[in-house]
Length: 223
Image (cartoon, rainbow, N blue to C red; front, side, top):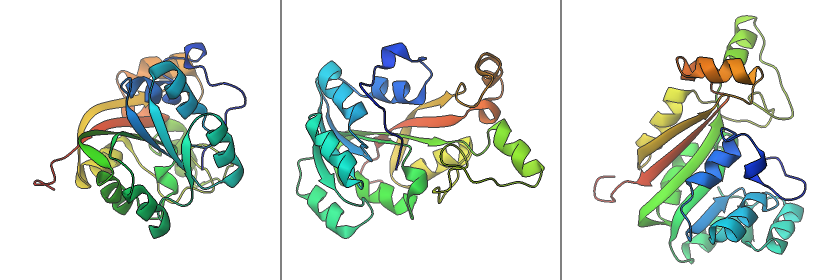
């Protein structure tokens, strides 16, 4: 459900606005983390080694799940939208962080998924979630020209079931039981990094290639 890093993931060697860098930097040290769509464990392994976290993963791809286990994650191999997987997670101790990068746009019902995930978080638990931005200038140009391309990866990934803009992504998170604490963008992933980074200061919705949100679980009494 998301790309795999070959070798060790080292955010120190990447641009600080890289979406995966932002994701791992938002995770508090020594947290108990549930990573949804953990792939081959490249991010979880970094959190374990460098931030002293304990990381529990969910991954559909059996080969990737085995690699993640080798990297120190405890992994459930399964579909996060299936009851079988959800029931296994319900038996686990509450998590302080749910990390979900490049996954939510692949889900059949993102809103229902977010509501389910709330029950896995502690009262002060955090959700860190990212997604591509369909409002990026490159996507707007394609649509303006009458195109809706299909690619292996990126904004027009052929496996995406949902598409979000800066505003609609925030609305999704708020509507399904979370209070926003931080909104970040990656303006360097879609080409022209220096120009896009500068222009994103004035037009974030137009030059954000990806979006990342950190949100706190809303009180069960209010939701």
